[in-house]
Image 1: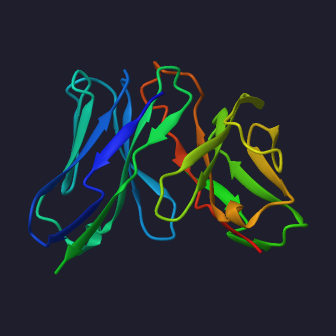
Image 2 (image 1 turned 120 degrees about the vertical axis):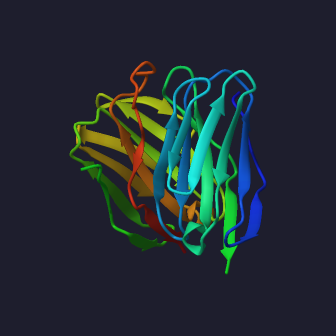
Length: 111
Length: 118
């Protein structure tokens, strides 16, 4: 059974600071997703990471994937209040049928 | 256009009611999904349809009955629900289930239906 662990689950940070969210998973997968969810809203796709060593950046967010370590990171640079949301990583099984989500990281960026 | 449309946005129903949730996409996607999300929890997969056939049922109680009338539509029929079934129900679609070699088989999510069972 595929298990996905995110940490931290709660993150309160000040504007302008940097931080990293970690996502570990238990079995082989070559596809990992990061989603953002605002309160009461749906999931917004941020990144799809398809291979070992993949790195993608969009604005103040950068995601990377190490399939050998079964680890993905979401790095936040110079946080701003608009980044406050819950961030989920999700790992796809090898059949390409199921996404298993981490518990989510609730990020609050304070002025 | 990467839009998945869900209706209604909100639904309140009694335990003896029958209601349906609807999901529609016009991206030509051949895989569609239902997820259930409780407050402050991650989405949990319920059903997967691939090419209009049910391919995955994650041991969901029979009071939830999915239906895929055509490649663009996905319904979730609800009957005799319990208060613990109150949640956000999310629909998603992707180009094709099981296309593990396809570079961008991303699941796009609808806005969800917030269901309250009284």
